Image 1 (spheres, rainbow, N blue to C red):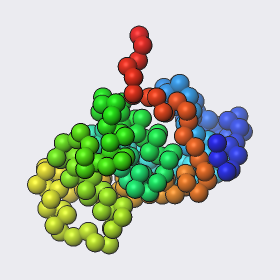
Image 2 (cartoon, rainbow, N blue to C red):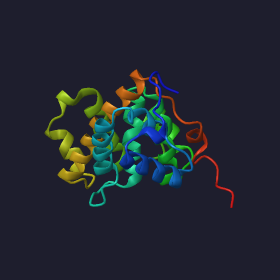
Image 3 (tube, helix red, strand yellow):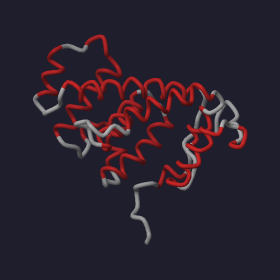
Length: 190
């Protein structure tokens, strides 16, 4: 599962246990990232506080699907198996398109996404791979698709945050939970 052993849930601080159990209640399993990072409680708290500030933000021009699309595309560029699989699963669910995550991960330019989302991913990929080359023209292209300066900040911040996440997952050999592979691919049975 990981180069570093996961701590036992009962050995973790109470606040971390509660958050992990809440996620387990909602998802039906505990994502490996929660346990892998819990070995360092102060870093776990900081990581998930920033994660939640970016990914659960409600006053933004980015949808939940847009956010997951950014994570999936840039994680693929960073060759992070964990994040492509986990966030690809969430992307399929939010977009209600079983093929979109694979398309975005392999070649977002050919994916079944809107021109607005393509512009968003063009910018995210530039932040991911060539951030020193960001120029006014990049902002103008996004403004033309209705993104505000705050939305653009969100795109860049999500890309940068998951650059950290990708590197932590990759160096530690964190593997995606098996549950992620099927999520959002087939309709739920009732």
